[in-house]
Length: 336
Image (cartoon, rainbow, N blue to C red):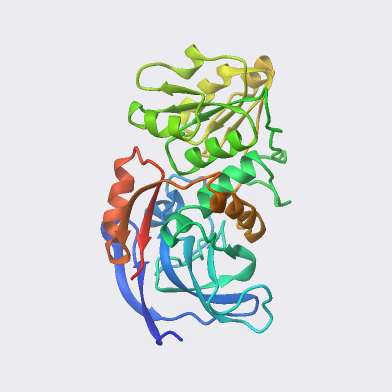
């Protein structure tokens, strides 16, 4: 059983990586439907630094409520040390991984222990270690819910229409923009698993990496614009977003779809003129879907690439690495 206190990284104020502070705090007590997990590794994701800087880049209506001080983090892998009486399916000693309580900011994963909803967890694939498992949940579930199966009926904060994944298979071409990052490199592999042809867009430094993952074509965006180089694509998954996202509409064939993972602005008239659709969704925690992804991770059909690892106490350095950009795969914190 854990001691009464633990180390956790907390935010007492908003700002740059320097505001991340290691504190001693009480070990959480699992409530109904929860288990207590001894954390071995924590995956770092963009919402972690959005929370750190006060979510200034998110539309006000999409900002979840939270109070300072707060422990950031949603992705973790570890070992179950206590189980609430009403929980079935998990036992003390099980190795688990999960995306915790997302889309809220109550995951509290930057810590030695975390109380997690059992429904957010899956058994860690035996074929991978905690570091690689911790890198999978948010990025993997984002790719899964955009491309494979939405898996929930929650309305999207971004649009009135329900997001519907495009059936993937032979004869379908998918362009993944930002293919070297966390979501991008997993989306590439899931599309290949389904038999699609994949065009990967990233900087030239990622070319060999993405070719090894199975990309059928690579575009170095520093040397050429995708909309000038490819056309008649069935689906664009844009993990980058921003003002440049609408340019990718011109790579699509009529009837094609674009899925922006991050916020982007589009012109409805342009979309109608091109005869394409644009939809998005908000990734949500799902232990059941993570278990499906876990089977692919276990067999090596899909693999998580690790950009770099840092100790929990070095969370600041990990966020500084993230701020440098051009991340290849995932950044992970290790918990001794």
